[in-house]
Length: 114
Image (tube, rainbow, N blue to C red; front, side, top):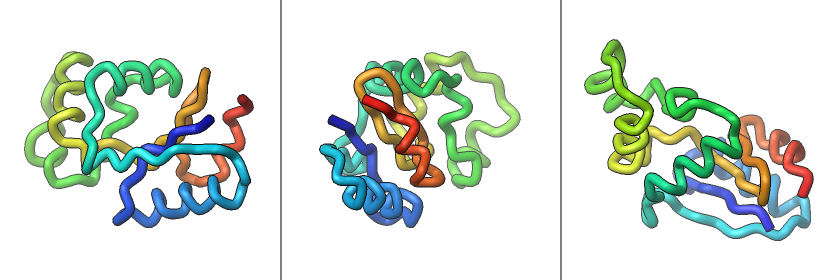
């Protein structure tokens, strides 16, 4: 089963959810702004995404521009910032058993083969 970390107000996230619906695959939805993710969830996603935390940050967000851009943070500090400011997390993220993708474009979901 897949899990989509979803923000209903985001067009790309809605497209990802619709893609999952149309695919016929089983999935659950986590609205991460209503039900924030933990540091452990972000760490797990980073492993499955095979990326560094800075690759998961939405750099166009005002919070990023005011508080993060141009400053140095350790990985664990950036993870804590994402937990405290979930709007900074790229979306949607679709997680499978062994792999996760940022589903932008939504067809990236097809890269999860379990």
